[in-house]
Image 1 (cartoon, helix red, strand yellow):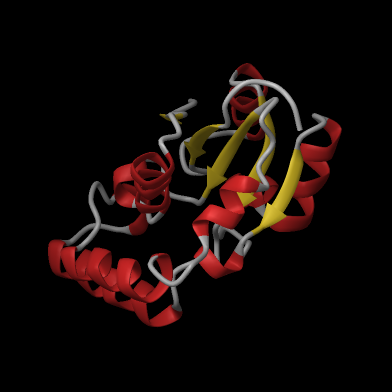
Image 2: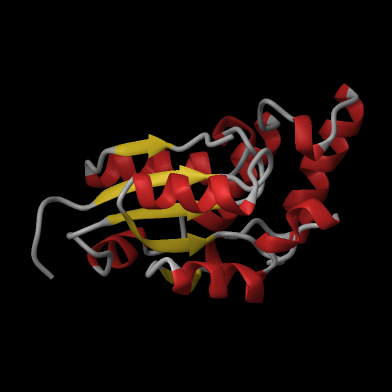
Length: 165
């Protein structure tokens, strides 16, 4: 692969329409989307475009590659830990603004540390941006921010958070 240095972006589903989502990706020069969700569906008709099969068709039409990286998805136990903290704070997944400290520790120890991020980064295109996808609108409220921070610190790649809509 030729081109400049590898570049990473992050994006969430919430707050987007299919149109604003694709526009944000194409506007940022995204060539590959890495889906970091455990379950590749989103509840509710307004986000049905983000369910795996529809999303993949939409990306293909925009000439954007797709790869599911389930190994970077939080475990069910970690998600339940975060949901418990959300309940304690009286917030929902769609309006969360930060991750629970215990979730961050658990995700880092159980998922991020054992994962070979170097191999993933080495296989990313250098001629386009790779975007990390999950559902939360704000990266600070999502595990993708932890992956992005590790990519930045361990591999020196620039990271941009896309916030369409």
